[in-house]
Length: 150
Image (cartoon, rainbow, N blue to C red; front, side, top):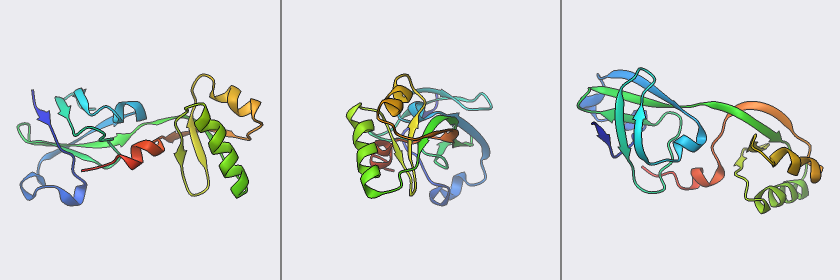
């Protein structure tokens, strides 16, 4: 089985691999946090990953399968999420505190706090009177961003 031990960004691909065939692998956020295990690309190519501890895969990361002469690009699957738009610094702090206090993963953007639609999260948002909307987005928790290394 082909084993991948490193990820690349498109601009970092080895010159020798640039002409390889292209494939994708579409993964949800939890799957992108697993640095070890068997994977199957969207076209059915099987391979293993053994990435450094703490590695999180992100959209646009490339996995070079030398033996198969294929580059597999990571695609972030859209998932059901709750989107919160704090209107003040106080709301940012309060909402982040309540969500973090319940050990819920969050994604922070310039204007929003995003939580996966998971059991208990909607109840938490109602209990704390945190206004939200539902959406389908690619979700990457803040801790995965902090641990992203190549």
